[in-house]
Image (tube, rainbow, N blue to C red; front, side):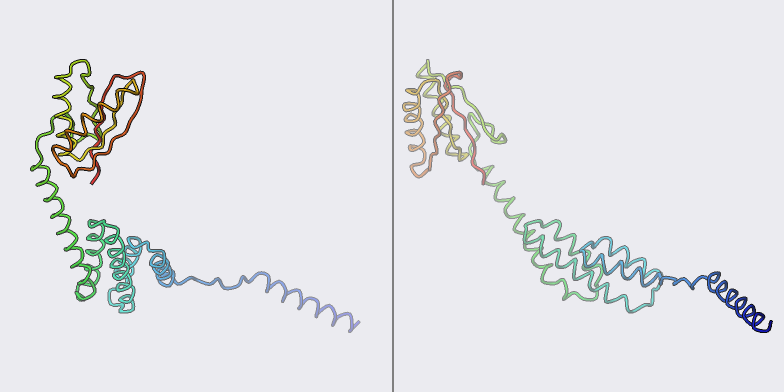
Length: 237
C-alpha cells in the first residue's frame, strides 16, 4: 500500500511539473527597434539606395539628436553621394552630378575638402557645356540661310526638274550650297540607272567649286517607282 501511495504521489508531481512546462510560454525576444533601423540604413547604403538611406538617417537623428554614433553614417552617405556625382559626371550628365554633389555638401557642410574637387569638376563641365552651346549658336548664326533643306529636319527630299535643264541647274546650285554649308550626305534616287552618273557629276562639280576639300558622300538608289530626286541628310556633329 505504501509503495502504491508513493508511486501515485510521484506520478501526480510529474504531471503537475509537465503541465507547468507546457502552460508557460518561453519569453519572446523583443527586437530592438533602433538596431533594426540602423540595419536597414546600412542595407540601403550598401545597395546605393541613397535617397532611402537619407530618409532613414533623418528619422534616426530625429529620434536621437545627440547620438554621435550616427555621424559615421552621415559621412558614409555624403561620400556615397560624392562618388555618384563623380560617376555621372564622367558619363556627361552634369545636372545629375550637380544634384548629387549638392546632397553631399548638405550632409557634410563643415567638410568643404570632401567636395572641393568634384565641385570644381562640375563647374568646369558646366562651363564647357556653356561654351559648346555658344559655339554651336555662333556657328548656326554664321551659316548662310538654307536654300532647299530644313536644317531642323533629319533629312530633306528635293524633287529634281530633270525635264528643264535651266531649272535643274539652278536647283543643283542651291543643293550644292546647302550640302557644303550644312555638311550633308546625299542620296540620289532615280528611276533609271543612266540618270545617276550625270546627276552625280553635275552635283560633284558644283560642290568642288564651292569647297574643293569637302568630302562629298553620295549614295545611289535606283527606284523605278519614284521620280528623280535627292535626299539631303545633315551629318550629326
